Amino acid sequence: MRAAIILAAGQGTRMRSAQPKVMHQLAGRPMVQHLLAACAPVFQRIVVVVGPGMEELAAAVVPHATVVQQERLGTGHAARIAAPLLEGFVGDVAVLYGDNPLITTATLERLVAARETTDLALLAMRPADPGRYGRVVQDEAGQVARIVEHADATEAERAIPLCNAGVVCAAAPNLFRWLSGLRNDNRQGEYYLTDVVAAARAEGLRTTAVEAPEAELRGINTRVELAAAEAETQSRLREAAMLGGATLTDPGSVTLAWDTRLAPDVVVEPHVVFAPGVTVEEGVRIRAFSHLEGCVVRANAIVGPYARLRPGADVGQGAHVGNFVELKAATLGAGAKANHLTYLGDVSVGAGANIGAGTITCNYDGVNKHRTEIGEGAFIGSDTALVAPVRVGARAITAAGSVITEDVPDDALAIARGRQANKPGRGVKPRRKS
Ligand code: UD1
Ligand code: MG
Image (cartoon, rainbow, N blue to C red; front, side, top):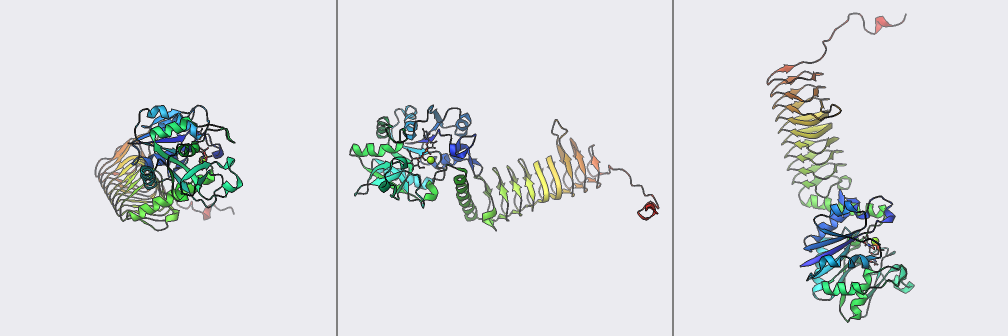
């Protein structure tokens, strides 16, 4: 059994935000959830330390236990207050920082494996710019003697390239004993988690640093760093999508969500955005500048360019959704087509139906939403307004420009528009001023 304590009580002042730092999103989900996902295969129990008033954060980490750190007295203090929730826990405990969400499961596996052969293992990196990170001070034998915080470090210590990533792992009784002995007589007046290293060494125990790439261990403190983390997250997701068999013709311009599912032989053209909850089946082509969220696109369908699929859109096998078409809670049957300038909301469209240019489902009366049903093989003429609730039968036709307010039976033709009147001689020329 292994447990993890995730520290996330800090508001993250440098983000200049009303929401807690770890609630800021990467690829469409809070960064803390990325960290939880990386931890899940390695740690059977997880406790998250949150700050006062962070109910939204506590809800975002369910079903994991949370404990509130009332006063922000330092990372060591935050880890310590999680101890009662792990009372009697036998096994290793790791402490992680919620603002370090790019860490991978593979790296966490290396950390816990290193712990098997030593008493305390920690993650370290050699960043291009070591900046304000804590420095890892090693002895001649290569063991970690201690970690010195930037604020407390001498010039010589600041010259050390090896930096503390902020993840430590030790057997529960050891870790909690070291934590309970921490002191705050340092430059920041905080209880430093990092001081557990010196505590371990003072007891003559063994310590080791496991190195991993900066790209994984970089913390997020500002919006600039958030953007860099988003870029890293996107490049991982794009690579996984391509290795999974999808073609991204211009990967750098495609935005994916953490849960985007692209089947083999999907082609995604440039400048497509996937918000969360999208599944795309085999052989689909998503043309340029489309935006998809909470929807399913079934095998061999074609979407876009410039299509918008909103939550509840379900595009059937081989169906076509063309330019400037918006779908919301709309099921399109197999082979149905809506190719131009159309809004389909709260609607089911039967297989093989054709939706003409400019068709609008008038689904909202200002108070309630109403459904439209379009039968199999129906033909909706261009510029039809379908005033819901309304049903157009199978193989029925609506004439172009119709405002359909009553149900249309199967196989019928509905015309609902003013008759044309031609006025002879009333053209442009006779009306000119003399
Ligand atoms: C910490 C490390 C530093 C390391 C760096 C890596 C300490 C003392 N220093 O510094 O060695 O190089 O991370 O990114 O640990 N938190 C709480 N309660 C607190 C204080 C912090 O929950 O009382 C949480 C924060 O929300 C954050 C995490 O702990 O998620 C790290 O705190 P932060 O203030 O960012 O520490 P750093 O100064 O970055
Ligand atoms: Mg930090």
